[in-house]
Length: 254
Image 1 (cartoon, rainbow, N blue to C red):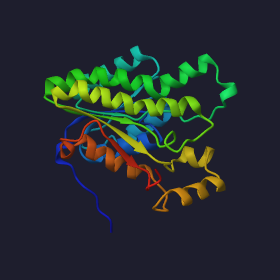
Image 2: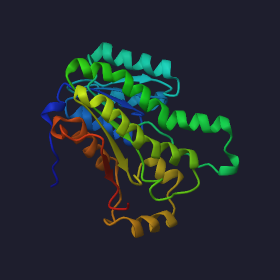
Image 3: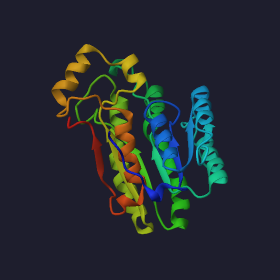
Image 4: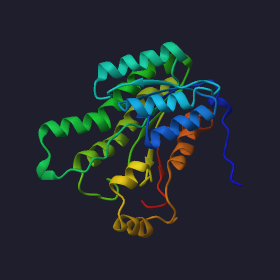
């Protein structure tokens, strides 16, 4: 039977997860709650977020869900404030929220470009800036920005998404330098093609399965739990000297 690590430093730690109601984010919420962390999560998906919070209400620390449109920065900052008010200073941030909607170059309007950048990149900066003040006062913390292997693989058919995700790694490295003197670590977690319900329902085809088989060194389905296990390591004190790095979890595709 497979067993996984327990992280004592995550017990009672206030953790903020964006996009936590479904997909990878839902698994992040479940796994951090199981570690004994105080988890606040934001998402635009009201019903899914409320259902997840209700399901986990009997945990050591019941998670807090705040319905939030992360592209509205003022709303995002209010939500972070609500989580802080309930759980105290936030010392781990998982910038997970994104939308890998497919879109053609010829159909990409200036308005769509701005909206997609807001969903996939902009909020990561403002969430990090907000919680950094908590982390400075606490003597340190961990920020995990979620990237993607899509741009590394030269994947077409979603240019704003791939552009945004490539920029995440630049954001991580600049924040790591600026926040480093305060013992705040900033890393990028780079998932491969994770088999969430959404991915299977909308995008996975027989051709896609063949691409995975050819590309990954380990020809198994990459699951949300694999991403969460890396995220917990990066949020815990075990990764104390890891910063400004890319942690790729893709079965060896890139």
